[in-house]
Amino acid sequence: MRLPLFLAPALALASSAPSLIAHADTSDSNAASAQMPVVELGSDASLAVGAYVQTGFAYRKHTPYVGQQDPSGFEFGNARLLGRGAQKISADLDAKLTLDFEVSRGAFFVQDSYGSLEYKNGLLSVDVGQMKVPMALSCLTPESQMQFVQLAPGARDLFYNRDRGVRLRSKFNLGDAYFGAWAAVQNGEGENVRDNANKHFLFSGRAEVGPLGEVSLAEPDLDHSPFRFVVGLGASYTDMQSRSGAAYTAIDNGSEELRVAGDVRAHVLGLSFRGETIRGFVKRSDGVDVKRSVFAVQAGYVLPLGLAFQLEPVVRLEQHDLNDTEGTKGFTDSLADTWRPELASQRVTDAGVNAYFRAHRLKVQAVWRRTDFLEGAKDSAGTARTPIGDAVFLYAQFGWF
Image (tube, rainbow, N blue to C red; front, side):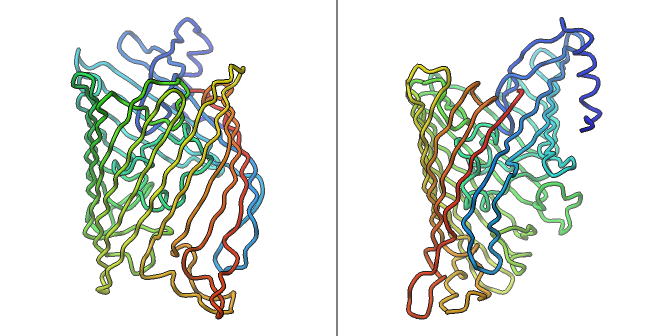
């Protein structure tokens, strides 16, 4: 694999001058919050490089529904190259650079790609470029530090993921209490779309507070932390939707949409918990009002076994409905019905176990998933058809960050 140009100087310098290598905290809400090798570029600048791979095997029970893709085989969750740059501007002001590339598809696909100005170590920061939309907790959670090999499917389809624009963020403490806030204006076209085709924008914001202190965005509590919890609220609005994906039909383009989100996350002595809900309210151009919703809860416990690795059983329950006006069709004996199962109300149950050998830099994850339809997919007698079916995932993550 040919390395991107921005990595070459850092790697060359690292190999020729080992004394310049250090380790620095490169925490960021959109990326791996961990330690990456750093090359010092003079006394006031540095460049950090890293990578991680999530790969494994997935078995999915075959179903006969039109449009349901259920392949089994070896696959990637992520394969990322990471770059972080930092440069001191003044005593209180730093310039930073974040570059994340996804390479599992045989080419370089940009994920996060933005520059930042940070005042007083994050008291106030401005990001410009392509970054995550700051609304939902599940979107801001680092993909390298999840308890499951995949995001909850409904949350994945209802948060906005990455977009191009400008974002403000702030993080501070008052006594023992932690406060965080984000606000962004972005094109609303999604990631890696060069132009704002409809000249309208996506507005989003989020605020969170932890009365007892901050809780890491990483899902498991590998450090057996003292009890802390954080409550968050977020929202987004666009007056002209222009995205694609499972949550959308062709007629959704041009619609007005408001989404609101609420969540809580907590860590205590190896036990982690988080719950999240997202609600969408759509006014389509054909005059039809549509509602979307997802609710998910998950928990894990890092067992105090004193082993050479950390073992964590995990469980998650999620229920979602991406379009309350569709999905109730399909009451027919025909398996080739045009009913769209991805828009039906579904309940997804995940249970698994994780083994952390070097925290998130080397871990193995096994997950069993059960997906059930809560509407549609019945025969003329009212008997429910076979659900989407069971799935089993066995993944490993290898990281240098």
